[in-house]
Image (cartoon, rainbow, N blue to C red; front, side, top):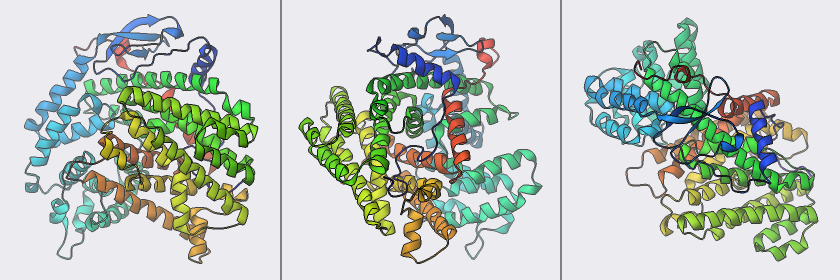
Length: 604
């Protein structure tokens, strides 16, 4: 039975299945063929801090098993290569440039840090970046009247959670407290201010006005700009940097940075090689995921349900882009894949009486509970029960925590929220907006994913931090609401055509007695913007955060990935195409690198 619109799982909700690109399909076929033969597949847990480069060929797929001191790369000839020569020269060249840049030009330092982070290689230079950001923070910035420099500094420091103050912009305001019209002629400055405005918090009215001021002027001036400026501004207006998915931004920015006449060649080559190595890591993770999914055989045994491990993996890469979180990506993908099937049972296939029994069984969380549920539900229950316990056992071994009570609670909450939606549908009940949204955050899987991630990473996992999981942190709730709302913006019309009776827009329209869906959509977008202001407040906290930075970043990344997946609206064809393109770019197509054709680094 179809029920309410957009149960909002962390998935490409209600989008047609995405075909695998040929190279990924090949990987999946290898995984399926070897899954019964190779039970212990060793995957690299993180990319080595000392990447090794080229060039001894790998002749068998089974040899794609690496230890922490080796890396794998696909060459231009299609051969698979183990890396045997260190890339420390590339990193050292960039490291030296970063260390000396501030003495030469503080603005150049900020630009270099920005390039490093956008290219996705900041994990190599975390210490150096923090050292230079400390100098940038202490720099006598107030002496410059350059809008670009002031806005760029503000955005860079806030993005990296350094103390910032909007007083830096007072010099650009007139006596009435409005932005001076004269700055509208500074195109780069306006673009930099526009990007900075997206890191505003609720009480920073100045930046909120800057967002509208810069957007209006940049949009009006675009027809008169040079093509290069027009390209940058068009991309920013479509999706500001702060809202972009990190890995996809790295992939696209490598192309853009290579076209800049003054690009740093060593940094560019490092970014290309790093992207390809992380891509190969993701391919190995996908092999492991598909092996597990094939052995689980859940969808085939059920005879229904979404079979989308690749899309689930796209979400986890969006949430945890750092190479070192390989295990977390693999385990989270498993939970999201099962969540999709659970959602399908509640959304389409389960009778209400059976859904009540299913929920009761999960609440009991023991094998005896299966006696009272239909056969097809037993298959799903066992998959959920075993996978959750296996993840819990892994966490116990690695971090010494028994987290079964925490993990099972997230699933119980999901089942209870799903059952509530099923009852709404059967009664024809349309909840109020807040009731719908609060329930939708739970059914969407945000709490489940972030609680699992918190314990899988283990960083800062102590009794005090674990206690914050009950009730769930507001940070999780804000990110989950953004997911729920973007999901509705992208899929509500299609689901309403199937007979679903509620979405965030429908609830808002009913509650406020308005007939315009466009007005409701505008309200939802404004609410998303407001929720981002709440998320940004976690970037300004002066005291040490109770939650680890990795989980704060993951929450922001979940919100970013939601927009990436659903921003095309409910044009089903375009949404499907974009997801297919994202998976191809991130997991299938390597970036051509001059290094493999000319491994000498002397000229870099």
